[in-house]
Length: 338
Image (cartoon, rainbow, N blue to C red; front, side, top):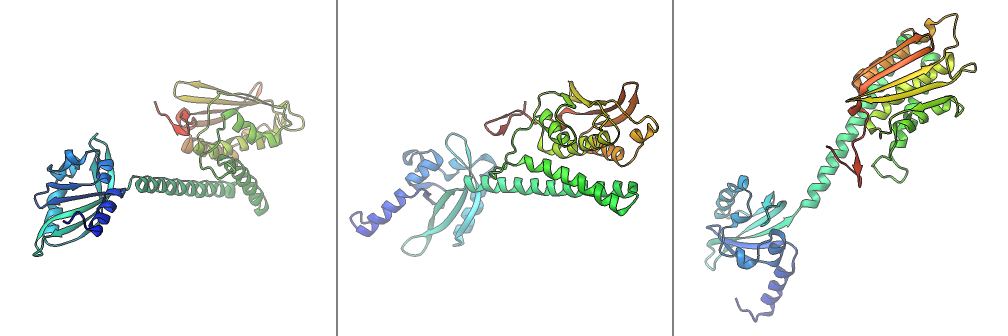
């Protein structure tokens, strides 16, 4: 090569200045040139790399790729956008996209290969995030249809008229939609804002109370996004019944909602004085609300739900898996698991 040829100097400057790794090797897989992009990508200097086998940048489980690549080059193939994994000098694994072309001598005989390697870590991360978002979307859509189906099935068995069915479904779905809309910020940030168990319960029940007749004593834990819908269903049912028959009615004395953590369980108690004396069964009969709560707690929260009349009034109890409700500790937007 004439080092004084302006064209050759220009090409050499392009090769040295590019961010991509540009490497040449012979048919014995020995490195013959190594640009600065290769130094940045793989961590080896040109002095360290030239004369070494190209497999110095191959992870152990990828070294058998080289034999196949050399065989294809000998046949004159050009390999384009071959995605694989390579290893830096410090041991870090990086996804790369390779374009490999045969190098011929003056007689047209293939004597080696030129290789361009591009770091595609960002593309891999974006693809992974997209996959996670699509999985989350499928999960949420599936949950929404499952919940709507369960609501319709139970309500259809209990409703005495089409109008009652319509009213029951509209009120419950509206409550769920309102609560779920709070899990994504108005700025479009996909990370939900922090919501404690106490805040969630008060948000659900506040439309039924006056700010003083709902008293809570709940553990200060952040609620997982997946738990918001089932908890909304359960507490909405309890508040609806309480407004009709109990502590949140015009003659009621309010409700007490308390909770404790016992090992890996979260136990929540809803307690209220009941004002229906002539037909106590109206409060505890297994109708739509009770069936829905039982189904929701057992399938979505890994626990049990019960309601019973005591001397002090109505007691509703939830015994649920703490892990199904509690958001793992987050720092700088990431979940930290023990």
